[in-house]
Length: 103
Image 1 (cartoon, rainbow, N blue to C red):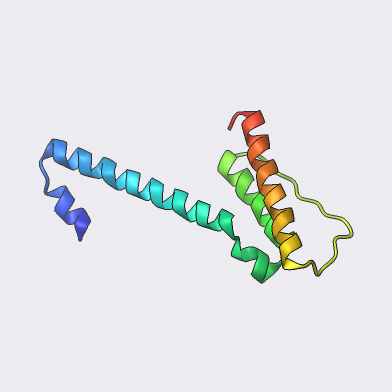
Image 2 (spheres, rainbow, N blue to C red):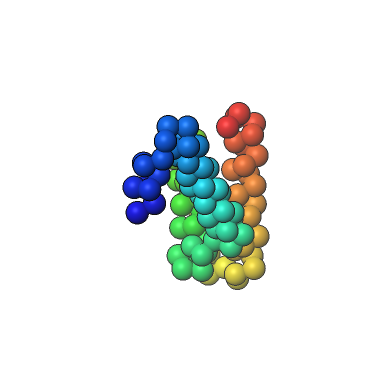
């Protein structure tokens, strides 16, 4: 509905409305990412190993790189506080490595 209204705007106004729409979409994605980083529901539902694998996959897709995830002899059950701490370390490592690699 809003798209049809915007398409009826004169040239410059339509360009500005399209840019505003793009900005809103980008801000929405940023807020979604921040909310996910504050508490990733994957930890609760699928566990630390699967959440870590998903984080590596997300980082790889976001930066168009290959990220291999391997784990060895990790306990199936980890207290939620410990899982969250380990996951936060992985998040920071992925951000730090991104900064070092220039993305």
